[in-house]
Length: 303
Image (cartoon, rainbow, N blue to C red; front, side, top):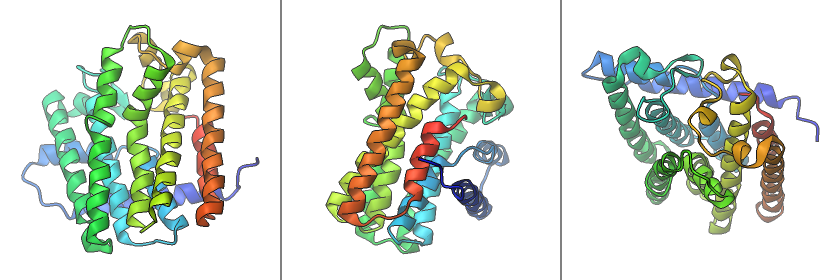
């Protein structure tokens, strides 16, 4: 299907909207350490696709909900994501020198300050998410959103996926294990964005479940495409060092299935995500065509 010609402008407008919101929220912070604050803001302001907050706004808007609570929740996810990138780039983890086209946080501010910047961003993410009750979101929904938010970052989410990724380096790993790593390391946070959007928008339970499933497919698709791009992208295109997974002997869809096999998995996952949207259209009346455009954008991205 042909991409909606208005979607790239929509996506750029949403990114700029989120960047301005992040800048505004950070300008309100009173802080004791210039060095720590600067390290946090350096990584957060380095750019990036803002996939998670854009995804949240898109879903909330598709459900007819437009308030600052949705925006602040999306920004909380971006803080959590940025913290994970800072720690992921550390010498003890993936040991990368570049992120979003710039030197990584530990290369600019030192390893100790980078660790603290990640810690502080994680804590601030929970502060922002817990504060959406003051921005038009009912308390019961806030508490449930916090539960989903917490799980997505921890042992049964992003941190657990990263641990699985590390312990499986250099090992022969099956497709089920690889899929589980991706669903946790990358998929959990993106799926939580989708589920949280449905929760704070006041959706009934069957809708929340469908949005969770849709988010899982988007998260898995994102990571499969990441595996593909790591094998054929450049530093200028990706904003980070290409070929790192292969150098670290990490199992990926490309290493396990080859490029053709990985691309087949990506196409199948894209179709599954679009099918869930079709089901939701009939079940819930979700009519925002941009969700389909977003799915195709994830499947065809080049960075």
